Length: 347
Image 1 (spheres, rainbow, N blue to C red):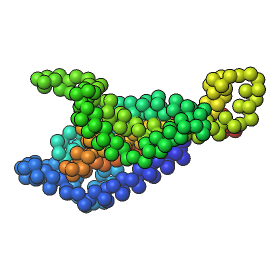
Image 2 (image 1 turned 135 degrees about the vertical axis):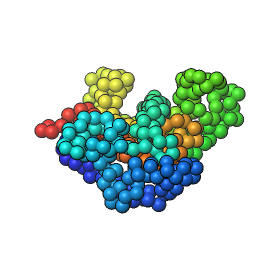
Image 3 (image 1 turned 120 degrees about the horizontal axis):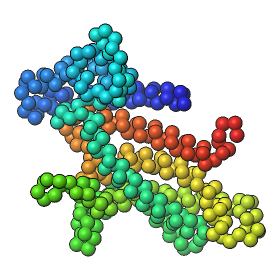
Image 4 (image 1 turned 45 degrees about the horizontal axis):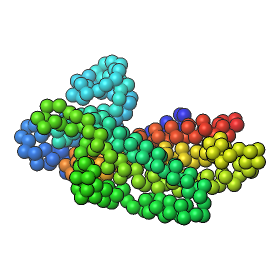
């Protein structure tokens, strides 16, 4: 565990260094705020508050201090109201054990953590829905292809899955949005764009719009669906040729019993690994799909921030994405060990 934590810390520091260096080419905070016609006094106050008038190395160390769970702040720091955690007084400074502070947006001055937390719900719902579409359709189709190996059913499903893997998600999103949200919208009753929650016509309250979820979930789920078809089919074909499967059949078990009791449980390990990797990818990488459907999530928030050169939001989204991949990888690894006792220490 400590080794993984050390590896994660090293990766995050390296990622911070690269992203911080790359985004120095973006317009600075004073340039962004000047474009919004902010007065000079307000602009200078924000620049000073964020420490952007200091040398680059001090800016980097200050940002690392902000995002680190263990940090040191002066007792008169303007950042204290935005910190959430516990402080230990140390004279004119305090030692903080806190949640990472991702600073404030250049554009609207809202805390980045709050912006990302609000967008996370939309992305999580979309990613989970896409994964459910992929699993509920991909696994049965893979089983069907495996039990009809070499037939037209197998060839057709394999060809369709290969096509699904080859098509980029952004192209699928554009095609599905245009076809079912515009051309046949009168039949489907679906729109090209929309978010999980929508204001009523009077702008007084939010309403849940699950119908807006259908098209982006399908568009985002096509590639993992195609992968699950291929993976389930190939793994099952390999498992069904094992000796214990032949022994189960010799004992008089029918094909359904052989599948559910012996074949499928042993074919799930590679699928679990793939599910964990794909879910983290969907959760953190649905940027273009969200933007095409105007779905309010992390992807749309990040692309909007890129267009506005909103560096704190961009860096916060990058760090959050890295954390998602690390957590999902760790969870998948533990689940894989739980399902396969041979991988447990001392086994």
